[in-house]
Amino acid sequence: MEVNCDDEEECSGKKVHLDEYGTTGDMNEDYCDEPDEGEIPGSFPSEKGCYFVVEEEDDYDANDCTFTTVPPGLNINEKYATLEQRGEELSLQTSYFYEVLNTLAKGSWPGLVAGAAYGGLTIGVETILEFVDLITFGQFDLFGKFSSLFSDDIDANIALQEVKFNYNYQDGFYNGVICGNDHYWYRCDKDQVGSKYWVNFAKQVSVPFQCYEIELDDGGLGYVWKEADHDFDRDGYTNTEGDCYDLSFLDPYFGCPSLEEEYQGLNSTELREVAKSKCIYPQNHFCAICINPGAPEVCGDKVNNDCGGPQQFEELTQLEGKTSDDCNKNQFACRQEAPPLDNSEDNATGITQTNIYGETFSWINTPDGGYCCGFNGIDDLGKTAVSSTGEGQFLCLNKEPDLVGHDAEYTYESPFCGDEWCWVSASTGVPDEGDHYSWAECMKSLKKIKRIPPENGRFLF
Ligand SMILES: [Ca+2]
Ligand SMILES: [Ca+2]
Ligand SMILES: [Ca+2]
Image (cartoon, rainbow, N blue to C red):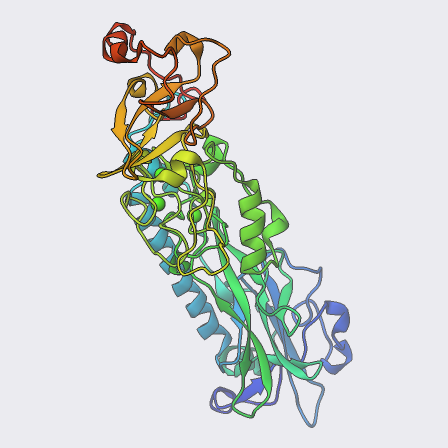
């Protein structure tokens, strides 16, 4: 910052644009009087934060210089503010996100909702809070409360504390900057619009700032970082964009996918694509990064995996929403299909849904809704249902000869078949024709067999 003011009153009345930012090599030390280590930054970048340098210009003498370091997340935008005011704003933001995290941690976690145990490890609320307690929130010591002001150039120090400034002017535009995690300044400019820079406020607490174009009072164009809402799991959806589950602390403990540094600088669309490409369903159905409005509903896990879908804004625990978690009420998840989009004219479909077994079951529409043949395993074998479209009664059967007892070469003639299960017309398609009246008796003799979970302990059943 370059400014000319000589006392508190004069300095506090000043409003200046920053005129430059760059590396120490960009500084013209000749402007400072007898520059020493207190006036000019030494090693670059600083281990403490981003450098902020002041030259207080004197008409009659060499300029006074000083500098300090500021923490990651300190944002220099279009508003005129002192450095200390910016520090206070950052501190407020940090407190806000800490509160959000605590609230999230005390809220419902999918595993608790589902009553599930992960690989023998049962996780309770206390455990989640322990994870949160592990967060170390750094105390902001902006300017080290001036302890890092080694300079004895009084005028420059006063300027540093009192002058209001906003962002700078480069390449024909006003460009805001934010202090980055690596203690370099990051510029928001016309090439960066829409991209997000993630600031690590604290351990496990990373918050996106998004680059926006704004029109200035003087008609010029400005570019400014604005703090976006929280997206702790980095799935590209903030909670205001409909993400119903953003607490990602437990993701690493359960083999959930995560993004490395590749998320920096992406816009929301790109970030969503990257995150989505890493999620495998149904395996990652409880992962925060895999639960959002762009995710598939996974029926049967007692979690609203898709938050209802785009623009639905349902809660994580809302199971009977737009896309039901009950496989017997959700033909698309039962059959692993995509529902048609509302008001679509070109047969466009929504997101392909699935179920906790990742298997295509057999669906039938009935007068009171429908039923997903096979989801309940052997319990479904021999279940009957009447089609709501006038095709009569159907039986739920499995293709496995040992279970059903039909000829191995027999193939069902049914439009309803899934991978292993079929709704078969009771009047036309029953195997072992002639015996089907004894189905009920046959079923009673079958030993009840529980389904084997797809992964040990990972699922409910
Ligand atoms: Ca999420
Ligand atoms: Ca679900
Ligand atoms: Ca749902």
